[in-house]
Length: 122
Image 1 (tube, rainbow, N blue to C red):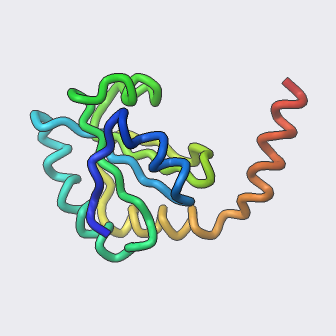
Image 2 (cartoon, rainbow, N blue to C red; image 1 turned 180 degrees about the vertical axis):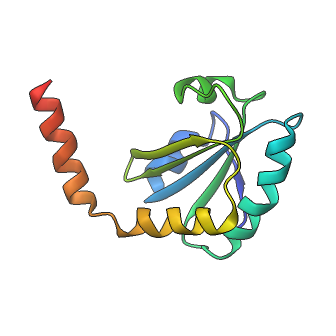
Image 3 (cartoon, rainbow, N blue to C red; image 1 turned 90 degrees about the vertical axis):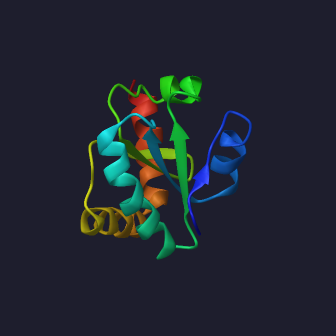
């Protein structure tokens, strides 16, 4: 699957309808974003079962604000509506592939139990 432009109109549905969603927060004026964009696109082609979303931080300031984006590019990974990863900077393709493998291997039942336990103790 190629990358998908996410907006306020399709953002919530995209997260709700897909198990794993990667988010590339970017802007057209950002040099590092232009470096990461082709890497992100290339890796997306190898994983047609995942959603590789792109969020233009200039056009979608509300979404960027919800994620506390302060630096771009920022990559975020959500699985089962849980934010598992968020990091600013350019990731090389091999690091992005490794991250995807780690996210796929996570025991999400355990993650949800851990979240519930933290909520109860708070």
